[in-house]
Image (cartoon, rainbow, N blue to C red):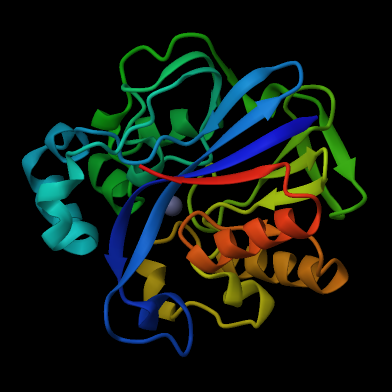
Length: 280
Ligand SMILES: [Zn+2]
């Protein structure tokens, strides 16, 4: 069982909502970069994703550094190498997918065990250009990962709530990892059982909660930065249907401030004992 969820904002990226949801403004806006800290009754302290980390840009080779900096970071470039990491020691580190804003701090986080998708091996084998097209920078993955295991080796269970199958990460159904590869190869979302009821961490399935609740879909041009646009549309549709069936289920998205606000409101309404928010 999950007793505590802390949303940690480790930084921000600038992007145009015009691209990431229909009706969004052309003016660049701040998108939070987040990771999630969980307290589990028996597994201990769990971190999902690392944020960019402290030395993200300086770890990249010159060309990817230039391209990535221009596309996603721009003027924030100078600030990106400062205090973007999480400081605690974790029993478990879980990676939702392999984009730099989720794994950039991988070599800076202290953890005992790592859990991730086998898709990392497929990404590592790919040609450099294909990797860059997928937003994968192998220099962000340390040579040795320590104790690690794969989601795909855990027991699969059917989740009647969601009408989806997932991997039962700790054998107690407290965290179900569900594949949603549209946004990125190897992306998993997480269905949590907390002491206040279920919470869905939908990570980067969409950039905005309104994409799921009001069908404000991303523009087709985002094809260029996602793994499989059609699959992304199916993933969004799946969560949109889930939201219609269960409007009370809070859905967190990594880069959507409104989804964080809604998660905090859900917590407040249900006793206020589970969710915390921290800005680094
Ligand atoms: Zn991503």
